[in-house]
Amino acid sequence: MKRVLMVLGILMWIPAVVGAQDVDPRCTQTVSQNGCVDWTNGLAIAIGTGAPASYATTAAQKNITAMRAAKLDAARNILELVKGVNISANSTVQGAMVANDTVQTAIQGRLAGLREVEKPKYFSDGSVQVKLEARLREVVPQELFVESKTAPMEIAPVAAPATGSNIGGGMAYSGLIIDARGTGVAPAMSPKVFDEHDKEVYGSAYVDREWAVQQGVVGYVKNMDQALKNDRVKGNPAVVKAMRTKGNGKTDLVLSQGDADALRNLAQQQTFLRESRVLILLD
Image (cartoon, rainbow, N blue to C red; front, side, top):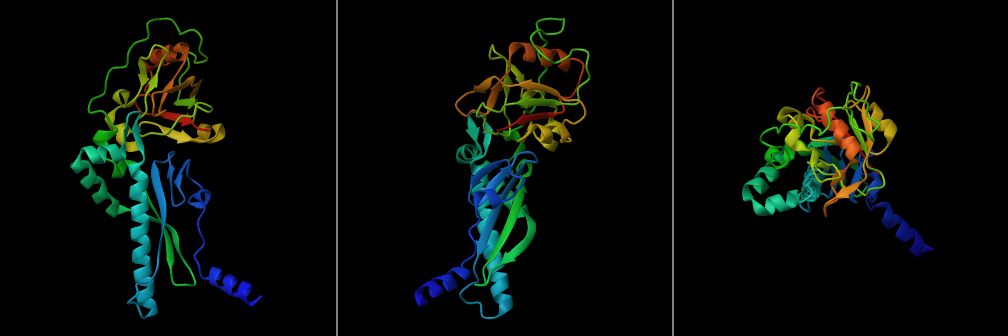
């Protein structure tokens, strides 16, 4: 009995381990026990835990050193999280950092501007837990996920409304929702959308740079109600179903030829694609 009480006493002094689902309720992709990504708002979020320094003797010193250690731990966790982020079907942030020292230096330097989320948690052993967040578009250099020039949208091969699509040619749309549930699509900062003939329908090359920098090429959500209420597309968004993913990274999507042609027709008169008013619906 004494041994049980002793073990329970020790456990009470150990900071609670945060489960992956508890990092932050906003997250759409869990990366690790300590970090996740909110792809709807383009945020990398991580927690960090720190203990008082061995030289700390006063309560103030213990709090200050534990807080400093916790923030450093959270910053390291965010850096590891950001490294694993997909930029496109063929590249990750880590790959870009390995290939270019300038990119690595830029990303590490921008992590100095991390924002604290919520109030710190203090534990009975003197340790502290903090949650920090970083906006991906502020940490990852723009040239990695935004094209330098906007390409002209390819005109659909037919002048009449495209067949085989629920998108009405005479409708005014506030955005586009691509329902990719069931495809296994992986979130990325700069995904592409193709038609059935492997021709690009949408991607960073077709987005005005100002909009891509401001809100990213696409956003991601996990249910249709959330998508319809999202400021990025709300009003009267067009909704299409993705057929499958494309490429090894599974970040790109393929639409039916009818939907692709309908979007190309709309792009000649409406601006929602150039303004990156596109959401992808995840499982």
